[in-house]
Length: 140
Image 1 (tube, helix red, strand yellow):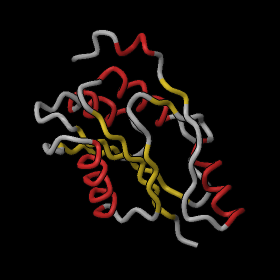
Image 2 (cartoon, helix red, strand yellow):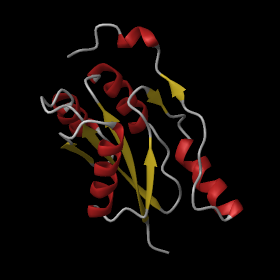
Image 3 (cartoon, one colour):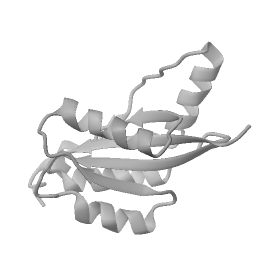
Image 4 (cartoon, helix red, strand yellow):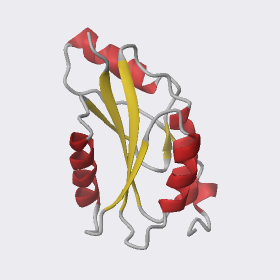
């Protein structure tokens, strides 16, 4: 069996500190067996407030990190853009997480396990929200 690509999609809007915390947690993820990982961050801020965080994190990431800007405002627009980018990268599976969340280390492993066990096309579950204290003054 060839390795399958899981693209982790993160929408963000003017919350670079939260995004950084989310990305740090993602770089510590266990990759499910026979799967490769990459990350796509879609910045819904035309001023590119997440660009520097993504550039910094990309150099430290254990797998590829891609950054794009979606200028049409709104969560639907940014999520659609993330799906477009994941398809361009030939993702076999797509995982969404918000910039104010942190996955458990085995987050994807458990989702893949559940999908295989139950023959499911979709798996959902809880993630840890990042402390609200980080959002205070999180403009740059």
